[in-house]
Length: 334
Image (tube, rainbow, N blue to C red; front, side, top):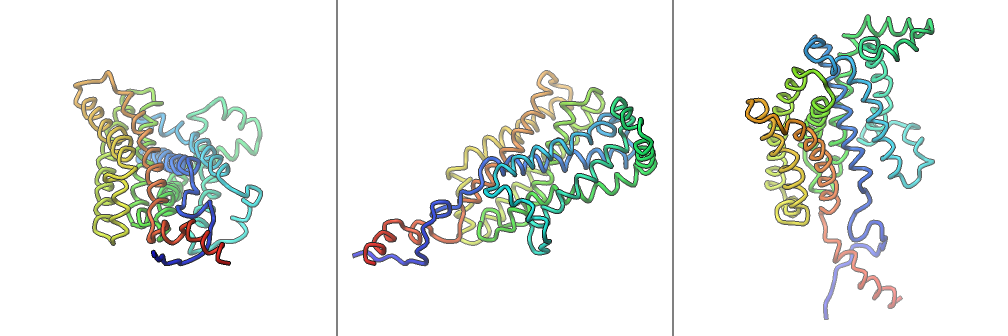
């Protein structure tokens, strides 16, 4: 006769035996949110550091992409909501201890901040759009004001963009019930990854060779930082509890080993690092455009793998505590 310990008799197909509620929509939102943060940071730094001549696309045109990319991310997040008509409830209160509440309000603040950032360089970057705004007296006055305080607006943008980039990682790390997520590295890792993907996007879209070369060098530094943070993440899991070690096994021989090491580390970090190093040294420029594409793929792969592996990690044994066979025995005995 075998005995099993029942902690609860709950039997919910959406929760038991594993928490697989978040799918690709959330991973895409995390990716696009980090990319938005990187876009806003670089566009602001180009103004603060007075790099308009060296990086004209970044200084004058890049900021326009921020609300577009973020809106795409918000769309995928909205697709994931079970009760879409209740989304307004995020904004009926502010819970200071809830990362999700912080994130909801940060997303609202980001939009007007990004609009001010766009307007501060609209005449330089998109003169045809500025022409429409200038037709109205109020529009012309707003553009004049934004241009006058362009430096101050850029300084304001940076902390909000950093909060957006860090929040996408803190949102996961705050789930203490998921050992794979429960560490202090994810917030910084997602921020650096978002900046790396933004740098890769500049390399793809900028026309000036010196700007492409500048952001190739920036991306190489960010990739090296990302590799160091990944190492810290793995060390943090390896030095944790038995449950952290079990969570680590999911990417060290478990079901997420190939996606993590091949798609993210290999294709998303190591190969771009090699290609960018060869390009900077002048050895090989024929594959220059491949590296930023791989960085973007790796940025998404990081979020998808971390999200999936985290949802599988747990502090308890769901197979025994939520055994459908045992639950059926209880129902029959009743």
